[in-house]
Length: 391
Image (cartoon, rainbow, N blue to C red; front, side, top):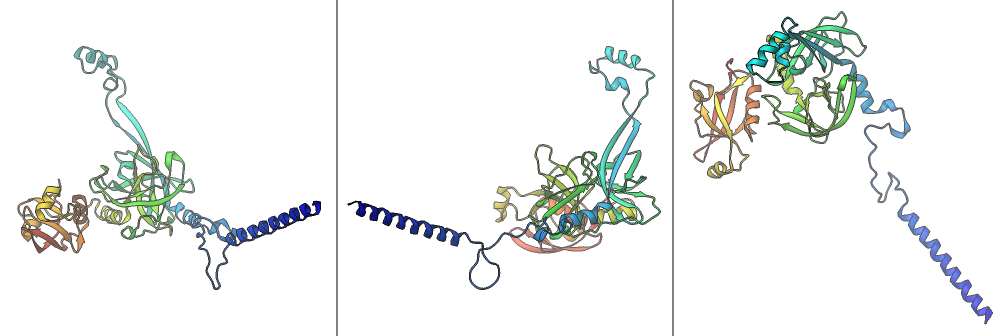
């Protein structure tokens, strides 16, 4: 009887050992790393991070490192001083408002004190011409009496405004230098796709030449309330006060935008002016000291759902003409109030800001083909772009 029990115990132990070994074999087979190359099926491996060197190589092989080394010398720190006649001290300190009795008291109390004030601001800029031209934001240099430009090598020089364009929040300044300056390469913002790498370089909070990385979160952002002409690139690359005027770059190190604003109430939401828009603006500022823009002479409005239904289209299928100005390019070409502009040179028009930007950036005198809907019938008009009148 004892031998029988011993035999059963040994048999059970042997079975347990066999099943245990089989389990280890099967586990190893399913979790064995796939061999890349060769025949047979294999598991797809995640690609190596674009920011990391391959096979433990030199960290300098990282694209981010190469972008930093290539572009950082062309990014400058811009500080300004605004000193001018401001409010008198009595106007700045009136705890009782404009009550006549107290107003006269404080005016006499502060009489004879200096009436001047001084403010400083800090931003970034991008060298666009080796002789000393620098692109930045208008709000960085607005009303500045003194501009100081500090280069990557810590050398400082005084700058002078060449021209400003508040409608796009861009400005060009000039510095006098003996040697050629390193110039950034401008890319093409029209080919940007959501999800591409986005790299910002600037001077946030006065921290010189800081690099941050994110992606292009969106393109063609408008109605942000920052400028008259808005066609922003949205990015989650960290942009903070002091980054204004600095470049937004792609992974090749090409400038795709000029950083201009952040959403104060949200993290990871920054905006940059597309470089193609900036290219035209800075060209006009350098050549003429001002920007000339295209003009049709129309008032336009967004389609409401009710209006869209009456036209038999979707709400984003066009922009409605609400007014045509006398003797304007639009009137001369036969455009009428109530027409629905569907496309310009084959490009669909979806909202008023887009139409406004397309015309503003068009060359003066250029003839554009408009596809319109009038009384539910499609028509084509050729309109020659005029120059926007000075206000």
